[in-house]
View 1 (cartoon, each protein chain N blue to C red):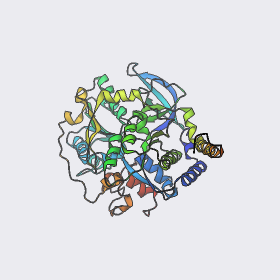
View 2 (view 1 turned 30 degrees about the horizontal axis):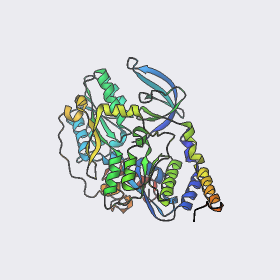
View 3 (view 1 turned 90 degrees about the horizontal axis):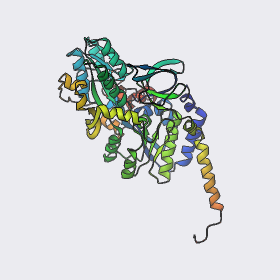
View 4 (view 1 turned 30 degrees about the vertical axis):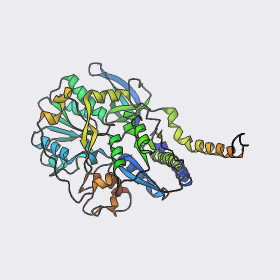
Length: 364
Length: 94
């Protein structure tokens, strides 16, 4: 496919690896923020081919992983107790809640549907006026405009049977949280290309200024990731700390202004609990009062307390890059994609799932 | 979840009483529908990046080539630096 397959060229990948080897002179820890980049690194064998001086640390950019346990419980409650049609992206279904996952709720008879787009959920609501339809609106800045747009479409159509269970999270406060943690030592970042497609690069200049770390906005194909790593390494070796854009074919400096307008029409910034981490100030979106009738938590008076995490899961340390998946005693043993103890083993973006499927550390 | 795929706009139609532009987009042979509400300038034939049913960016064809020329570019920059080393130093410098 155009603009995808050419960024998987093995010959050029070798040349990039060679250039990284020729450039690096000391050990550097680089965090790729987005779980999509983690998967690209592990699946394509890049981790193994990088020189040993380049230590890739896997960041918290996996929305499925950081969505609070409590929210899964709320989704399960809506499906089973309020009998709503609960629509969700596929990768949320197997994430364990405090008692059950959405998949288990589906087995118990809940009307839970996997959708590709929140706009499809609006159509379901339109076609089924006798049913309440709730979209499980999780994700980073990339997904926020589409989820907000679904609310705008529903409002425009005058639907009173559509709402969203929203828990959006934002990347820059998470980077700040990682940098403030005394246990994590990150020298540079690959920023998440698709988040920046929406939000632009502006939010990263203050971070570069404050923490003196290079941040390179990076894409997801193997050549993108390799070029992003090379750009970070070159900056580090030159003692620079700047914002650079590796993914300029997609990311504009100002981001997508139309998308930002749609986000701020429906959402406002709020404090948000990150699963496995903590409450990070101003790190998420919630539905504005103006659209309160589309907020499922208010509409159905869902008040479920925060539950205890599984004590065997070290998701927090994984997501801050303090530990690698194989350092968890339960990795590949009690915890597998078919029976995950925590969210990073579930998602197509979770670091534990990436290592489980592709690293060769687990015998199939 | 932030997965987004580039595809080519095949056709555009107006929906929601003419207020929303929806496009049929070809992804290597598979056609799917996506909203163009966040890309008011996108037109038939453009390559756009689609995420969960919404087109979020137009591919910049010129920038798209830069990953293929980057290594050569930094190589040439390196050569220039080398040349500088051999040039006579300016007056006043040590």
